[in-house]
Picture 1 (spheres, rainbow, N blue to C red):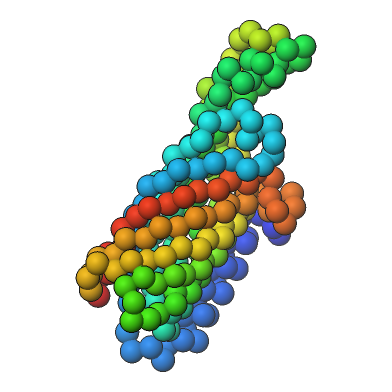
Picture 2 (cartoon, rainbow, N blue to C red; picture 1 turned 135 degrees about the vertical axis):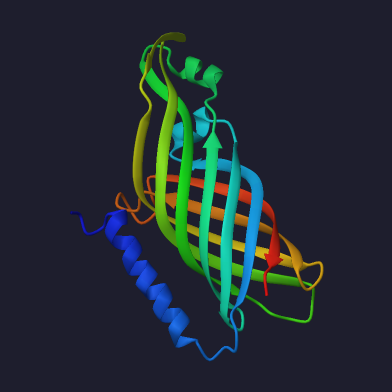
Length: 211
């Protein structure tokens, strides 16, 4: 098995996160919170994908465990979907044959987050996560000379992905907070450090502290 595959890289990250939690066990009690979000997604690369896909929707659910001061370990799951801009694909297909469909990403990632703690209700943070991203291309259509000529089967593949984010948490009270977060996602790190597909999300969500 390829040493860089998701099945081997995820356990390595899990061990790292567990070691981090144990090394910071001096905290009296970890603070656990659950986060849910909705948002908008925008393809950034490659150019052909960004030109032929509409902006997408983003849904996410995660758990943060603060292990020491502003340092947290995170577990996140998310879903992003982009629909095909059929008119644009018809225009591009003049003289060539183009096969495109809707694209979605289903992901699960582990990571770390650092939040700047202050007396203010606004608390900025930065986070990074690594996980498995499943790419699915559905409703695949074949266009040639501006016409729909055929349809093909859905295609699915899973690769490693990396996400980087900055954001700010706004506390409403001791239990509830809202957050705003721009996030950049790199899909298929085996192709290059920058990923094969890259997309950008703007997330708005709620944070519920459990203890």
